[in-house]
Image (cartoon, rainbow, N blue to C red; front, side):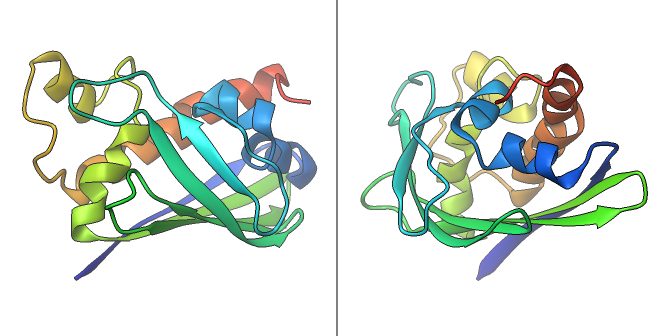
Length: 167
């Protein structure tokens, strides 16, 4: 059974600025996590998180779609044995800013692995589980993944856009 997280957010910044936040190594690091991303079709890159007990600290990705500054998609794989999920960003200019659509599409079991995106320092259900020493290998419901993406897109990314941190 395939699961999806879909979010739609409008930022009061032009598309090129938002694009730099989602398709630029420094921009992604400022609101998501450290990485070696390059906006190049076929580029393999890694997101790196703080190590968590029993979890690998790298998420392996590959750029599978690139249409600057409109659309970006990459695979998302926590471990060599996990199934890939796909993260797709779509940007659309709107009056006064940019509409961003995020889709994170995965098999249900992959959502447990995709949660490693979430920094244990962010205020979410995943970090509460981690702090309490819960078994992180249990499946994490898509609602928790959606909650975390919502937090990142509605709190962390707007802070970065407002500060103009990325190049």
